[in-house]
Image (cartoon, one colour):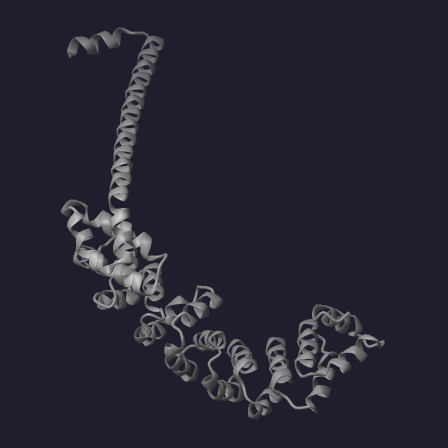
Length: 359
């Protein structure tokens, strides 16, 4: 070693620099070789896994389809699943379960029921992606047996895991979990309101009572109650008219008022028209628009003049809803008269008539 140091010390600066450069190039080359070998090894490993997966799919597909046609053959399928491939089998069945419902999905659940315990343990993993996958699998194939794990996941620190749990529980197959989902809806304030309303509507009519209670609950955030109103409108829940009218009469939040008015336009009754009329003068154009739409559906003949006057509203959006409200109220001739006049909204009236197929 001292001889090498002495030798290096005898080199000129230029020679030392060249030697250092050569050492760096050699190290980079060695590193490149290592990475190349790793890439080749990884590719070989992945190709081996892919071939094994295709082989397993080919072995399972026929028996699974046969069991779907004849549930008595579920046991035959389970005897084919080797213990080391049970998790892969659950993954295989999960892909099928997303495409079927009813009895066929129940058959698939029965197939994988003995293999779900290890997946239930993953709900407590420290890795978000593992928890997400576990909750998704249990929500699709493990209910109601693993309902406790999925409901607990609604409170997961990760909003993504919580949403996966909510989507699994918000199902017409399991309306009994509607209340649990609704109690945590406030967690999803960054998600699309229309998406959340559609998710709640997916619970079906058997979950409507819980959704109505959320709409009427003043302790809930206004936006949560608005989402509940949109879901009830999608469900066309006739019993939602009265709680919606209460909201319209005493509410203050524009988003909630607009959603409740839209709900009344779908399920309201003539006696709800009075609270709707009061909101036609709201200072918020979104509320006025929704109120005019509802009035066109619920109002009486004399409300046609109110709708006609609203066509002069400074907001074009409000004017459009007023014109459409006239059509909904059956005042077709009145709207035609506006279209043929020198009214400032004559062009708008003509456009609405064209949309309705009456040029």
